[in-house]
Amino acid sequence: MDERLCSKVTCAREAVATLTYDYGDQMAALGPLGGTVDPHAHDLCAQHAERLSMPAGWVVVRHEALRA
Image (cartoon, rainbow, N blue to C red; front, side, top):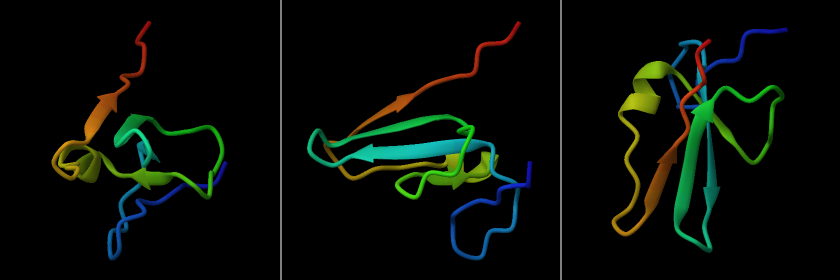
């Protein structure tokens, strides 16, 4: 599988998380890197995933990977 890079402009770090939005519900979901590239999602590096901020009134759901 090819390395996926962060979607943020000028960031060349490896993506580790995927961000999706539901504009109607004003909600964003951030979870482990998706298995496939989705044109409606944004892949983020660890730094940008950690610093994620959304507009006032939006809810962010963070899904953590299960560790064995």
